[in-house]
Length: 370
Image (cartoon, rainbow, N blue to C red):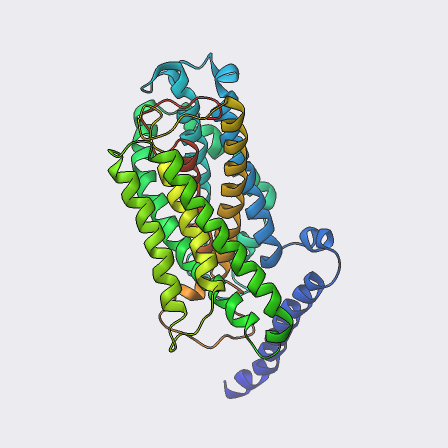
């Protein structure tokens, strides 16, 4: 029996070496060559990021198209007319249906990749490959919500408020981490002399845009002294900008003007997005001079918001270590990023872009370019 075990050891060793060699060869082929050859070669977690980001972007554009042009295409579907607000609410409900399909896709991916830690696991192949099956699954999950009654969609809309809030929290932590990394990189000995002028120009531009944005919000969204809530949020945005600057310039911190300037841009954008999402019947929103101005502002804000969502979701999913309390040493066969957390951020991001497109109000009608 001992002889049999001794004879089997070389075969086990050869098998382990063969498995290790196959993994190394596989990823060596994936790293080398063009992005197309990498994608066609099979499972590649780095290329998978771009595909998931592209799917998420397409879902955003589809939701926008359904909101603005869905009524002319889907007018024959009676189920889509049951929401509050009549025919104009079709666009808002259509956004929720697309968002629900996108959420279900990424939530399924979240559940199916939870706990993946090694490159040679089957769940890693599922995350980084099987694109035909996953694209088909995504299409079916996008269609499925259009067959559900309006009550289910309304319930999802209420849940999406919470999911969007979770995404904003994750996005905030990710942006703080990115800005801190950028500031530390620019102030390092290697780049300090080279980036000094760029930091000064970028920080100055950020502060100028912040101040202009706050002034415009006072002009546009506080036409009357009775608009106390808008005045409160805009004023607190200004206070936060001053507070972040004071903390950043403290001798024990000494982080400079770049970090509070960039964070100020993000805070001003959040305040502007929140106030601008008030129902159109509110008296504290100054009507635009012309419809054209409202149109291009809506288009620009949508493009900026979509880019912010995609970039924040992409970077946060990769940088999941920011949310880990226990730091383990990385091994060669570890996955390059947390797959489950990556998909979770996309799932909550799907809820966020739904709230963004319907103005955080699931009960009022949404018209084209509202």
